[in-house]
Amino acid sequence: MGRNKITIEDIAREAKVGLGTVSRVLNNSSHVSEETRKRVLDVVKARQYTPSAAASKLARNDVIESTVGLLLPDIGNHYFFEIFESIYRKFRGLGIDLLIFNYEKHNPKVIRKVLDTQLSALLIFAFRLDDTERDMLRQRNVRYLYIDYPREEEHCIFTDNAYGGRLAAQYLLGKGVQRPCYIAVDPPAQANTDRKDGFSAELNAHGVHEFKTLAVGLSEEDGYRVGMKIIEEGTCDGVFCYCDDIATGVVRAVRERGSHLRVIGFDGVRTTAHVGLSTVSQEPGKIGSEAASLIMRLMMEPEFSQPIRHCITPVLIDRNS
Image 1 (tube, rainbow, N blue to C red):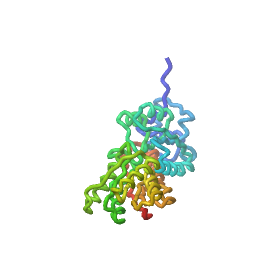
Image 2: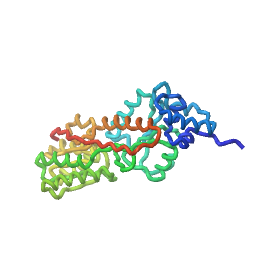
Image 3: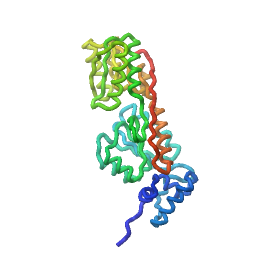
Image 4: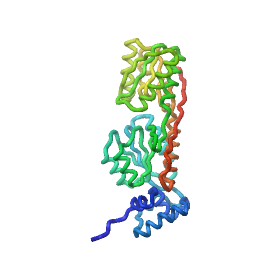
């Protein structure tokens, strides 16, 4: 009987390094320590491994050549798109390809598809992997980074959402708002909870102990409909929206009805400047650029490093909306 084919993933697992490191060794790259190079070559020799063309694509002529996957729940979201756009621009000049996987709920089949593409690394937007999915990636030594989702023991880049909620409360209070409202997203997310908690804490600190909460879908049209409802009821004089997409719809309703309702969003996407919307900005372009740098750093490291937790501090952009 024939011997099972040895793959680059087998070499990476036995040498306890990432796929990118194995490829750099096979391509005689200088970006590998001698100790790591020797460990990889010892495994290659012991397993009589012959590299394929696919295994050789990660590093060549000192230019990174590889594929990074994105698990993205909704590319139609302006915030996610601007992060993706920034990542794409940074990778384009480095020969790194991007593959987008639509992923809204846990599904090991999607992770198996990710692994079948022999990715060098994976970027995960706004949700966490379950134990099975995480183990599948780690067994194949695929580096991954969470974007917009804080994790204690894993690599992640995220925003201080509670502080952002405080900034939103400060903005509304500064505009004279006395009956605030929070427009949450449905289905709920951890970021939603954190923003609301920060909003509530800051209002309480200024003597406002109650505020109305409504939940809507994540779109401008949903924001428009709930904005019309709030204006018609007349029980609130200021709203903090979970995201800019929702807030843009509320602003549309406010201007259509000639209302004095104050509005602030969250994200800092480019369209807020065009519509004159105040927002708590996460600077999505900056998040994308830094996420790209972090995942490249992880791809270069010979072994799994201590968790990188990079927190973005949001800023208030006041456009008097």
